[in-house]
Image (cartoon, rainbow, N blue to C red; front, side, top):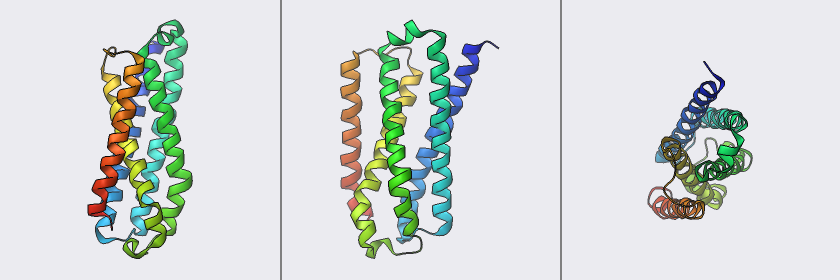
Length: 181
């Protein structure tokens, strides 16, 4: 097996683990809201999924760096690669926000009725926004990974990505009012 193939395999594992963890975190979070209580088990599973997201990002970044170093000129000239790097940077920032700011708040709500919690209500939109941001970003990363190249300029690609993120966050925020009191 050559080095390029090795890095591609690691990259695919990174996507599978990271995106899977992100999607599962959102599913578990929304499922936990049905009874308005985050149990110790639900919080433990969300923490485990967060570790999966970080593991996926580390695999993506390290294998992406390996691929980049194998053919620097090709990747520097690739709008697709640059857009993917922007998305990975945004996923990392969003993940850090969730892991270091929002997860400790979630953990402090263990067993408490979120419906009656001023702390949960104060951060509800941030929880929803980081989840929507994550889902849209991982979806874009998966789609970009499947494409040979992007059929638009980098500027248009970035505009479409951030527009989709904005739509996802607004849609998630507005629709969450129906499900989250």
